[in-house]
Image 1 (cartoon, rainbow, N blue to C red):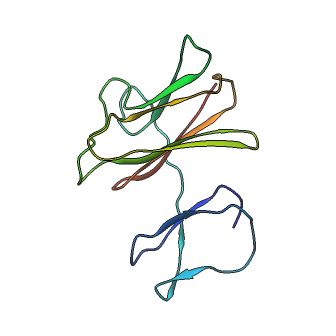
Image 2: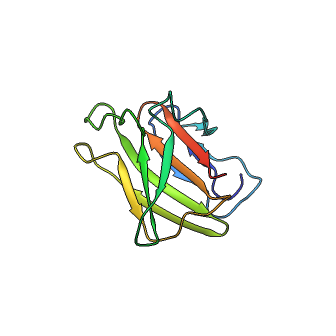
Length: 129
């Protein structure tokens, strides 16, 4: 297990992020937890890809589904959006009914990793080029 990896229990759905790495197995509900591999795709065709936009105030807004916003219903929604910039992590938790977006007070920079977690389709990632 390495720092910033996301794991999920196949039985109960518990999801957690590793903050301190280790080589020991971690279990939940009697089984080893599963590493969630971040999915990537073209933001033009996939509503799950987090997409960053620069703001005039020097920060950024991340939207999930640039041209077709991700649903935000109780049954299908984005749980959180995060920005990873080297050793720094900023995360915003969302609720059903909110817009699938988050504002961050950090400037958009090349190499940043933007991630989001959908309660149905899992972890999605975009690296700023």
